[in-house]
Image (cartoon, rainbow, N blue to C red; front, side, top):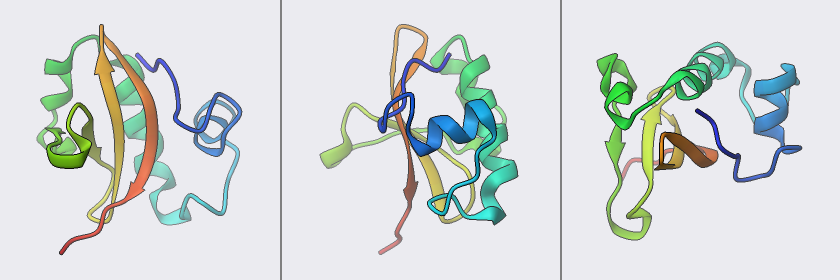
Length: 99
């Protein structure tokens, strides 16, 4: 389940998910997969359910993002969140940068 968004319940990501509001911060090319991934997070009842489908590329992050998890929206974008007690908290969209 979705517990919270990092930018708040009135933020751009929450507005996109709840109301379908488009935003300049969310590229049009990822809107469909982003909606699908947010729905997947909302339906998830356990961390284990996030490992499937494999295209999620679910991972527990390390380093300065220890305690956070992510699933891929596209090759460039990912959703980052904290998973606690069956809920995804502080969800935000990250433009993943490769080194």
